[in-house]
Image (cartoon, rainbow, N blue to C red):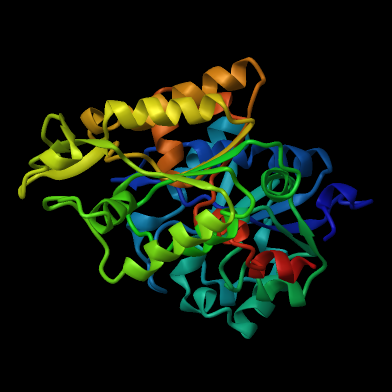
Length: 392
């Protein structure tokens, strides 16, 4: 895989740069800037090399139709302020755009193409669409690891028509995940949350032989609690997961990996409720399990304290309500404390997990923060990501 930093001459070259700027937007206002901050190194690098940069990205799921609520304009405007450069957004139909029309003013350095998912051909990995995109530039750079599990035109098919390179961030992400999965410093712990256990079963099965501890929290832990004969009230639970859970415990026994799940919980009657701590045998029919309880928090903190490497994907509770963010905050603080005395290597991934650690300004206190959710998990699962494969 060739990295753009090894390219000998980028002077005046038109670079199609695939980024992940899929930030949370509410009424045109950006709610989290992590993904924008992450792209600054590649932009600074290309600007220094005197390249002409054509940014391709997406926001949300417009399903191939123009939707102004999902325009990249707010992101473009935010980036302008961050790098103190004028950036033009091109909303002209890509099929009508020609290479010599992209930079009409010789002083222009960066332009944005409007949300690439406004074209249905993007998600179809369409050959002609990719070919047309490729005609706009001299080379292609993928610096969107978090989109690289998608076989989409601007991630995958486009590499057939242009010299293609990995970006700075993409290589950093892969190296950080390699460090966790191959250059392991034991004991190693994985904290995995989220609502669906079925979407993460591949990851869990792949990591059990390599890891010493797997801690299951969030909505997916409810499946385990229910499987072990506990009442979970009206909490979210996935159907038909009995065999999956049996398999997780079977594999963990064979590999001496300890599976940890909640011993006590924090419940409410609704998502907006105050928290009430309950033992597992105290859960009522109208209770919602929305966070882990203090006993579980202490147990997790103890495991982290004894770990040399920790990987975290998925919050411990419904963090949108601060009453149920306590488990996630305590996990964060414990990792940060160990990070500060350099006794742990920590990798955190996924949008929700980042949102949690951002709430207490701890993002700089992890060794590596991946904005990727799906790509992060699929890479850990051992899958070949289409966006990475196409660069090879």
